[in-house]
Length: 212
Image 1: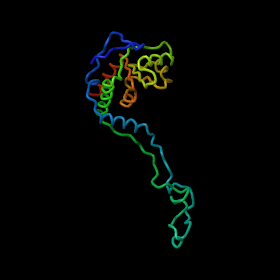
Image 2 (image 1 turned 60 degrees about the vertical axis):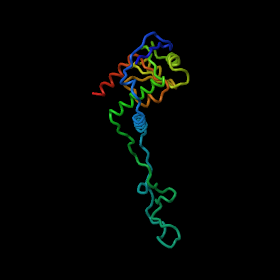
Image 3 (image 1 turned 180 degrees about the vertical axis):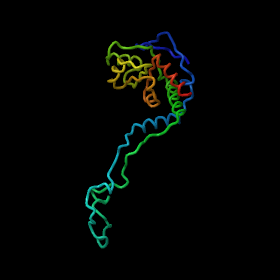
Image 4 (image 1 turned 135 degrees about the vertical axis):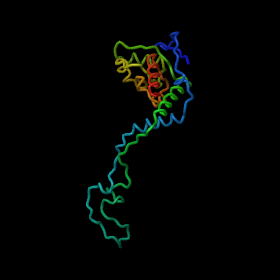
């Protein structure tokens, strides 16, 4: 699958690059995408929620009224959950929300997200570039030329570029990540996925290593 390589101004350079069909040309698997996104969102939860139950409330354990003859429900102590300030019944406890996903399913989901982005016209390839110094306005202008204004864009680089990373750190709707940080959720959560030439090779090599 051939894709035109764009310049930082958003114009064609007259060159093209082959995208691996086993990654960018497969039939997207919707269920694998669902599982991968669900796993990512579950891993974002801290799971530190906690409320005090009856045994954890500080208070007297004296029986506040006699068992029978009051015309109301029996109550053992002021820590009873039905009273104001009492413990909570079946309150949340700290727990992990992690979801296990097989490596093959995770790899299939990432490839499906990339293939879906290609079919929707949201994947673009740009020539390798860098900035002389960290400058947010310069990178914002490039991202606007490549992805448009007011859209969520992700620029994927092959290696860590300090100037690009610092320049994109303060962009509101765009971000810069390396190829090894690319995941299914980030691919699906952006409108335009902008790959540099070097990142394509890194993505392909990572898929090949995972398949071994």
